[in-house]
Image (cartoon, rainbow, N blue to C red):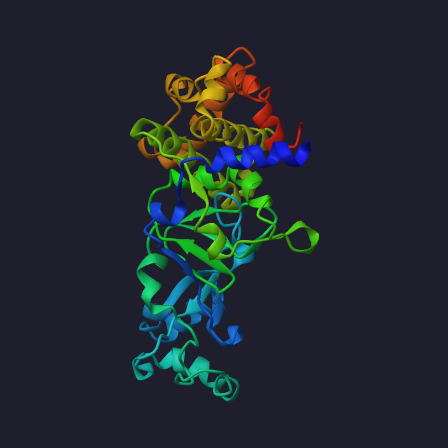
Amino acid sequence: MGDLAALRVISAIKSERRVLRDVVDNRIYAGIKTGLNDAFIIDEALRAELISRHQSSAELIKPFLKGKDIGKWAPTGYGRFIIYTPHGTDISKYPAIREHLLQFKPSLEKRALDQNWFELQQPQLAFVEAYSSAKIIYPNVALGCRFAWNEASYLDMTAFCIASNDISLLPILNSSVMEFFFSHLGIERRGGYQEFKTQYVRELPIPVYLKRHASSLVLLTSALVWLKRHFASHPEAQTTRDPLMLAYWEQVLNGLVYELYFPQEVRGVGVQIFDLAEQAILPDINSISELKRLKKLRDAFEDVYDGSHPLRIALAKIQTLDIVRIIEGEA
C-alpha cells in the first residue's frame, strides 16, 4: 500500500509539468577541475599576499566554492578562492601568481590533458559568465536537496550551477515535494546520500505559476537566503528563537509549493496559502536598510507565528492532507 501510494504521488507531481531543463534552457553547468587543488585553491590570507605582491593577481583570483561548502538556501563555507588561469592565459602578466605556481610545477606538468603547466586542467571557460552571475548552485552529492542562491562564486567539480537569475525556482527545488520526488529516483548512495547528476536534475518537474505567485516566492525566499547568510557571517547575532524563525519561513515556502503542485487538494480544505501570504504583508528586504532587516524579519515572524494567525492555521490544515502526509513520511 505504501509503495502504491508513493507511486500515485509521484505521478501527481509529474502530471502535465514542464521539466527544469526547459525552464532554464538546459543551462545546468558543471564546476571546474583544477588538476591540482593545492596549487590553485587558496585562502583569504594567501589571496591578500598575492595581491600585495602584484596588483595584477586580483584579476585571476575568484571566490570559489566546493560542493561541501553549499548548504540549503545559502553557502555555509566562504573564504576559499581559485586562481583562475584558463587556456590562453599570459602568465607573464601575473608575476606573483607565476611565482606561487612555480613551486608546484613538477606536479602540474604530470597532469592529464594538454594544457600549459600553469593552466587549469578543465577551466570550463564557457561557463564563466554563469559562475560570475546570479544563479542556483548545488553539490553533486548530498543528504537531501541542498540548493542555494549565489551571485559570484566559481565552482569546484563537486558542484553544479543552474544558470538562472530566477530565485523563485529555489523554494521549489528545496521543497518537501522535490525531496520526496528525488528520493524515489533510486539513486541513493550508502548512508542515505543522493547523487545529483545533471541527467536527473534536468528532468525535475516544475509547476507553472503566475507572476503573483512568483512575487510571493521571491519575497520570502530572498528573506530566508539573507537570514542564512547573515547568521553564517554573524553567528553571535543568532538568538535561541531564530532557528524556529528560519524553520517557519521554510514551512511557509513549503506550503506555497504544495499549493502549486496540488491546488485542488489544498483548496479542498478551504486553504489558499498564496492569498494569506500576500495578506500578511511580509517584509521586502530590498526595501529595508541592512541594519533594520533582522528586526523587521523577527517582528514579522512573531506576528505570523501566532497560533491565531490565519497563515499558521492554514499551514496546520495542509498537514492533514493525505498527499502531504505521504510526502512528509507521516502516513
